[in-house]
Length: 293
Length: 306
Image (tube, rainbow over the protein chains, first blue to last red):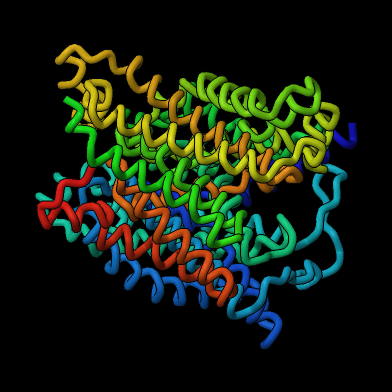
């Protein structure tokens, strides 16, 4: 019984974190209709940023968040303008962007390996205090609590951005109909570029806290995280950022159960889940149709 | 009557000549084998990507299925490797049939689902619980039937077969109907093309070629692990070769593979630490500036490319 309780509670906490892992990918997909195959690599970049700031200056992961926000806006803007306008004019933006982002993922991984070597890095979870906290008699490290609070803060910010700011309105307009948004005078490129940067920022924030939830960071961790993120956003619903939370929760609980009771089959779960959902209910468990097939 | 085949058959003849004579001049058999393997994979991927627009990101799944299918048949039934290679191809086709429902998905959804399928297959094969059948993560050992020369020429056979397939598709109504579906599904079906049947056949042919490649690779390599034959790089290299050359033609994937694979090897030997960076950048530049491959440059000069 104790094991079951632990599995469920840990699964929910895992799930909240995985919602954060996937949400950036979903924002970018919603706005640009492109799958950022380098998503996992931006998570890795966030993790490495946090590691070096912690190692060199002893900066707490919580304080890395504003730094990461600035850094990824600086990276995101030029990146967006370097390829997006050109791609959207090409014959098949969806497929070509898919391959392009794959290339980007390789470049990021290669640059990190060249700069820092192909090593595992980690931040001790004791940065948030050594005493555990407990929920319903199950105890968990404090770092988990910090991660979950950050994830909640991120979801609240996303909700506020989409529902209560002009930029958020414009972003939602583009998500629902690109042409009509253009006709009503929205600067599509600028709004999309900001959404793209936001997607990268949330990915990097997930990376900063990845040490406490999924273990050490290493340069080639990206592709697997991208697949997991994609499974999560398809589970939630494509193109609806807050639907990601539900996808994350389902995934978190499912993976915890697999790891506890059928550990040798746990690796295969995200892939099977992904295929099953795409074939059976491609609009996601709770979403409207977002797919044009 | 045959004249419309001349230039294509010429290209195929040149390829045969190259790979029959080169071993006498250049004794790196493994490089030549891999080159042929990627040429065949590129033509196989061309069948589905070039003619239907479905991007099989998990193409390596068929490759791995072929390798494991052939190996298991050799280990348990002790039949001749030639027959086992055919069995490997058939196993890949069976996997392709299981994955038929994926063809309902379009664009990037198909690509991701196919990628997930190949990874699922990898974890299935590498699962320690299946050790009695697949040896799990500990790999396959076929050294008792190892025969470098026989497997080399068998690979050449597979390559010729794949080129003939693409030639057939270029010159017949079958290929034309696939291209029609790629351009406009609705119009194609109005013109009387059975969309589901046509693309399913292309999908199985493409899987068959990859399965044969995997099976011959297993025989040639003799000792390998699940991570060797389910390595995502096999998919990606092949896609990049096809893109670089120009899809939907016979010569495009050949040119792309010959140029890029040689270049990859050169960089891989001279400066391996920059390999990944170089190849990532190349993909990005290719997509942005040359999305239709080098064949499109030739076509701009009004050269007819088979």
